[in-house]
Length: 345
Ligand SMILES: NC(=O)c1ccc[n+]([C@@H]2O[C@H](COP(=O)([O-])OP(=O)(O)OC[C@H]3O[C@@H](n4cnc5c(N)ncnc54)[C@H](OP(=O)(O)O)[C@@H]3O)[C@@H](O)[C@H]2O)c1
Image 1 (cartoon, rainbow, N blue to C red):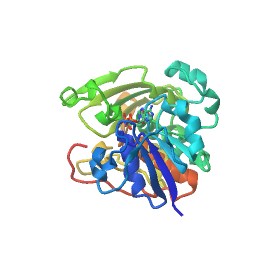
Image 2 (image 1 turned 45 degrees about the vertical axis):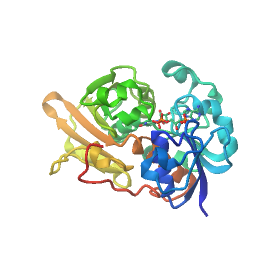
Image 3 (image 1 turned 90 degrees about the vertical axis):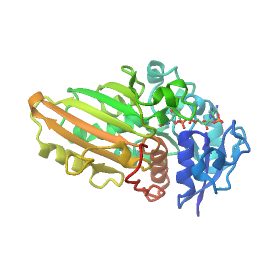
Image 4 (image 1 turned 135 degrees about the vertical axis):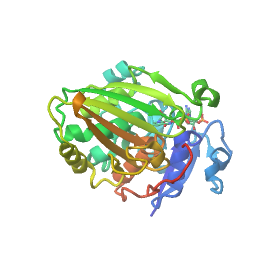
């Protein structure tokens, strides 16, 4: 029996990706896709890749009763509408940052506070590779942020395997594509302004630092650049270990953590043109690529991680989390392997 699903914010970028995944998912049937701006219009009129589906947008004020509701709305909407979302669905998967942090104090520090702090304990953060056991049966899920996901997947094995203690200096630089800003990305993401740039946009104080530090249990120095891609988040993490680290230690940590993971693949040297993680190689997929290189003369270790921000960084991660929560095959609806060769994603 298939489960019914609603996508609130179905006209947005991540909402469109959710709809693409859900219409091809063996366990879900899309019951409703909402948009206030496109109420009554066909989904294909906004997402041309979905022409041919007979879905139409409806008003989010009139939520149908479904099994699962995915909220792909701007920050602040889910915390305001969470009661309506939970009345409409048994399971709510939120793609925004509204339930990712664990305390009101953290929202006061990193955001503009929180209107429903009593629910923060109930929500499960979703980065299934790392906390799938908490997701089984969860009914309020906060899908991890895109830059945070890229960074955490890159660094996590080093902490999990004891290569790093947590006292080391870690400097992270993430390059992101314009789709991170959403469909209404504004002037900074308009084509003439974005084209050709490598523009620092959050040199310090990026909100995802809070998620990364919560998960890794250590502080990271984090900077973001807006670059001329549409899809993709590419993290370069400079780590300065206290003692010697060998390639064997690194392979042991990364293989030990990820060898059975369906959505994480290693790209660490090897041969060919794409020897390290590459956003283009994972565009449209739920895969993350992770790799590393040692720099002994500078006592440095550099870690790379690449994802598609709208897939592993949001819609794909949300569907993966729902699969785990509901007991489906983890890979259901997420098998797409990507394209090669392909133009800039
Ligand atoms: N883009 C990414 O790469 C990415 C990655 C990870 C997480 N996220 C998070 O995912 C969420 C969605 O991002 P996005 O990039 O898809 O944004 P987007 O393209 O701007 O889409 C936002 C959607 O929300 C709807 N919406 C806006 N205000 C609403 C309201 N008050 N009530 C109901 N619906 C409302 C919009 O449609 P109408 O205004 O027509 O209703 C639209 O469908 C954000 O919280 C974002 O931070 C995004």
